[in-house]
Each structure stands twice: as structure tokens, then as C-alpha cells.
Image (tube, rainbow, N blue to C red; front, side, top):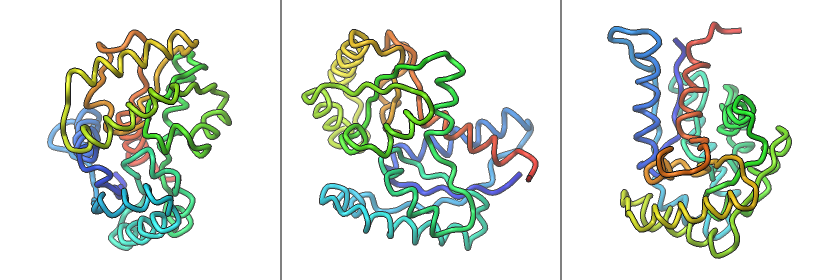
Length: 232
């Protein structure tokens, strides 16, 4: 088993599921007392969020690149960035290290294709829904991406930062997300990408009329696939 380095804390509410999902996957596959070989570097999200809000992405990328180098020096053989939005600076992170960064959208696109889904609605932070870095990578994989209308984007974003990142799971917010999903379905979406790692705290398969692509779970499983695969 190879060692994975987790870049976490963005927010820590979604880093916790990454740790659990990876260890569950290793135990399921290897049995017994096996657990995942992990290094975790957890940043202060308040610092990162300030840079994001000020559109200072270069500085955010530099901070995470520095953290990535720390994980590499500690023995990480691949990196997992435990957030969707900060994949905006994935190139800066990858260029700072020699080990691979396992991108969250690779397993997401693979899962969509396996399920025969080609037209997907996206729920995420405003930064993700309104930027090219995420949508263009999915389109390059042959997927069409639908984003909610402006008012819905604002509400989805608000719930993430004012509730989910603070560990608050509110029933009324789940209902509002379900309404957004329904509108995306009316627009032709065949499935929904949970494009923020915290959204799975609020929305599960039972809450959606459309199939869900939970990027957190898909990313964690993908990383374990890599860790357990024979080295090339």
C-alpha cells in the first residue's frame, strides 16, 4: 500500500469523511485490521477563504503548494486535495511537487460515463459554478454541464459557507436544494454533481429525484484504488 497525502481543512467538515471513507475502503478491500496509510496537512480555512473571496487565487495556490511540499517531504506518494473549489489552483500545487495530484474530476467523469450520464447539473460554490476550471474539464471529458440560475447559485453558495462549513445541517436548506435539483431536472439534467465536498452532508440519494455523483466519495475511492494498485 502506498501513502497518500491529504490536503485538508477546506473545510474540515468534509475532511473528516475523506479520512473515514478511505479507511473504510481499505478495510473493505484488504480485511482484518488494515487501514489506510495517510498523512494529513490541515490548513486554516479562514485564511484560504479570505484569499478566495478577494480573488487572490495565486496566493491561495502558493499557500497550498507549500503545504503540498510538506506532505511530499513527509513521505506522501500522491496527493489528494480534499475540496472541489481549490482545484482551481491544482496546477500550482502539481507544479510544486514531483508526486501526482489525484484530481477530483477524473473519477467524477468516469462515474458519469459508467452510468450513461452525459448532461449533468452542478451544485457547488459560486467560485466553482461560475468558473471555467471545473466545467471545462468536465466538457473535455464529453459531459455537458448545467448550472443553476443566479438566485439558485447564490442560495447554494450561501448554504455551503454559512451552514455546512460550520457543521450545520438544516432541513429547510435541504428542501431548497431539492427545489434547485428539480429545476435542473426540468432543464434537462440527467444527474447531479455534488461539486462541493460538504454537500453530501445535506443531500443523499434519497433526497434527489436524479442520480447523484458524490465527488467526495468518488475521490476517496479513486485515491484508494491508486494506493492499492501495483506501482507502474
